[in-house]
Length: 118
Image 1: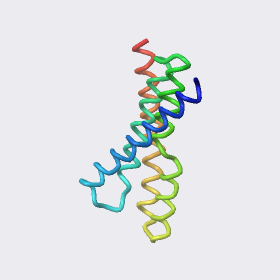
Image 2 (image 1 turned 30 degrees about the horizontal axis):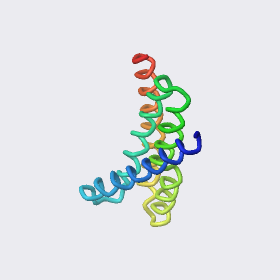
Image 3 (image 1 turned 90 degrees about the horizontal axis):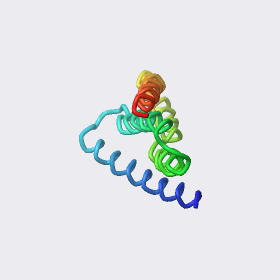
Image 4 (image 1 turned 60 degrees about the vertical axis):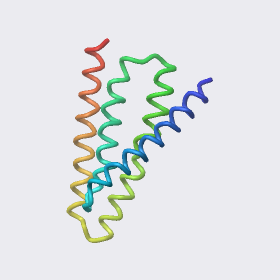
């Protein structure tokens, strides 16, 4: 049952990531990979909230499955490396810095909000 929860959540998360990424790219046509940045910050926030609100099975579906499929650290790394290779070092550095800072802030706010909602 646990594997089923993780796989279903992961499938929905990956589809959601793709759909949101396409939607953002329809409105954003710049070098900065805004779509992955938004997705990772939203995912950090949602995981932070869910830590205190969900029981084990809910965490398997939402935390490990959905948010694991929704957020994408590897995509962020490849985008940053690609920007660096294209001599867009400033944008690459800014992207990594903003992702780290706002991802941590999003996770922290989510954890506090999750504690408050319990």
